[in-house]
Length: 260
Picture 1 (spheres, rainbow, N blue to C red):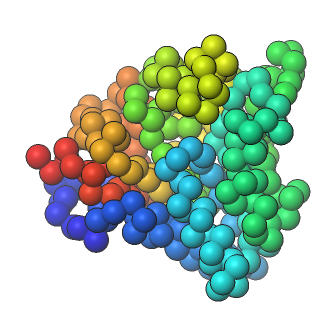
Picture 2 (picture 1 turned 90 degrees about the vertical axis):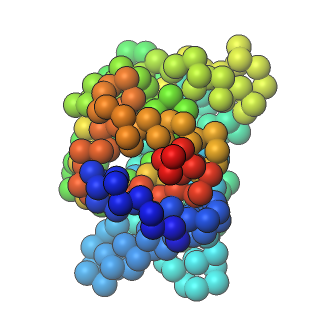
């Protein structure tokens, strides 16, 4: 681990690892420690989970810990950050498919404890559904840990630039850069949804612990802007500068501009 970022004292912990695999394993083991700690207390571990390329190695390590080291997920309650709207949950571009493929199908989590925004909904049902999703999180006492990635425009979840810091779960419009980054998954830009359901920034920042993981050189510019620039709704992730329970985990490439 590289520890030469003392100037970033506004966040509680800041960890830079030499490569993506080491950073991902660290995050996975931090999550595993929380799960085991809650098991010893006889309590659930309420996890906020992310999708995309960034957490794939995290989930790979969690699966390995389950299969090879006996880590149980029987006490885990999961809430995913977001989902495209509209999309059928069985579509291979859906985050339901992603989570099953990369994590849930390979561990012993109770299926009834899995919560992913269901977006195969008619427009008139969306508001109530979002309110219910928010209520479910509150009924579990909030999130014990929220895993985050960061978009190239600074979004966390699908809270795009301009999102209010007091926002909760809702239907959002996707930024053009977000849709462009999703084009490879959908084949053409025309197939990429224009909207999504996302947990809000307020919901995220109320988590008892937040792990932001960013990997690779293509994330270096936005990481520098989010962590060293002004706190502004123009860069939603910048709010994390003000949140004491945040831990920023990067590989050396993602951290490269911060060192300058």
